[in-house]
Image (cartoon, rainbow, N blue to C red; front, side, top):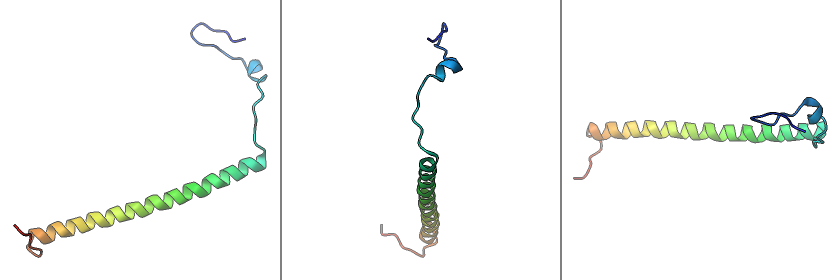
Length: 76
């Protein structure tokens, strides 16, 4: 039984009474490997998007420069 006034406190003895399901070590390794693979894939996607953003920013700068210097004429 928990004790306390502002929150219920559980002792280590009481926590020991809980049965918590735990995957086997082999299954834990399989889960970790799966997550590593998926996060590596996500990291590659993020890097690709960052590269595309950088290229678009550079293209924008070039376009603005070309318009300002008159290399590209803007219809009025």
